[in-house]
Image 1 (cartoon, rainbow, N blue to C red):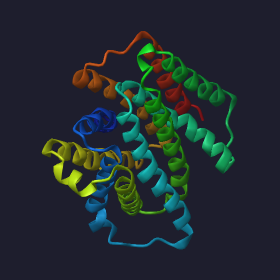
Image 2 (tube, rainbow, N blue to C red; image 1 turned 90 degrees about the vertical axis):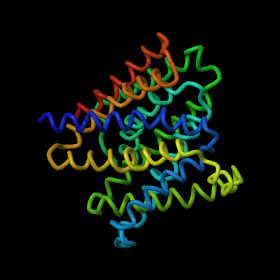
Image 3 (cartoon, rainbow, N blue to C red; image 1 turned 135 degrees about the horizontal axis):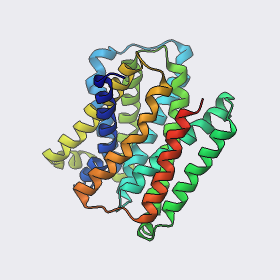
Image 4 (cartoon, one colour; image 1 turned 30 degrees about the vertical axis):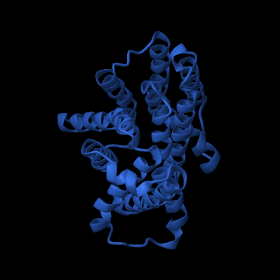
Length: 285
């Protein structure tokens, strides 16, 4: 792989890894979690409108497109922000998000009748064992609700990947625009009903938080995805997707630099098992 493509993979991993500590910074600035997820998707929608041009896809794509938009645009991002909101420690949430891969393989088996080899079953099992080891970390006593939401985030991402396979023929700007539309509208309504004071809260958001929310929308939700699809022009999904296992390293490093989080022995052991299992899952055909 040329150096240029390796650097792109590195940038993608850094972008995904940075999303977690940067989201926590916004939440610590008194921005409600559901509202933050809504604003992030609203910015994605706003940026993509000139490329989308309000095109409506063929009817045969609509069920999968709606399912993907709700899974990705609503569930993934709201569960991510809720996981971080209810967690005082970020690193376990980052590692927990890796469960999206074994969840995705299981979802593909049940929904698309794809075969799971014995080797894949082994690494799926070992990934869950790694998360179980992390659960026994004494530091996580007050963070179980956050880990629960992180598991739901991973499950929603897995379903989104299954639905996305039926949308391969659609333009990426169209699918992302619909994801932004559903995410923004549904989450904004939920924020209004659950969190309240939506307009006054938006008006009180600081400039620093707006910058971080914009970073999430532009760099992570759009930039990283576009770079990934660029690489798919030259490589298969199996060649590119193992790099997904790299982003927890950057996320955990940033969590240490920003919040001073020092991983425990149990967390390191469980994290190595989870990340290693996910990486090897990608390598198995």
